Image 1 (cartoon, rainbow, N blue to C red):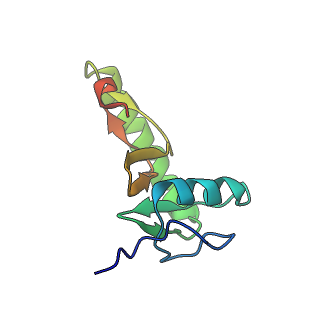
Image 2 (cartoon, rainbow, N blue to C red):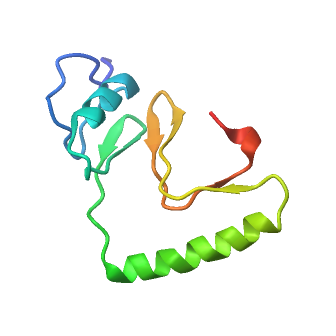
Length: 105
């Protein structure tokens, strides 16, 4: 069975549902316009829709709550919209990851 992950001759733009390896995804992502959001999960490109006001308002409350949690919980760091490389096949950008500093990649 052949590997479904594309490692060469990739298109010049990221496309939702595309199968890519991490180096190819990263190169294409860097070439995209600055407002482009994309994640690589299990070798598949995911490009979320822009968020609206309701999501943005709720996000503020989550960030404030997580900030309070981090201030009162030793060894916890809160990030906002940080891109993380979880593995060769996963590059994710959760809205509000909370991670202990020892979990840095």
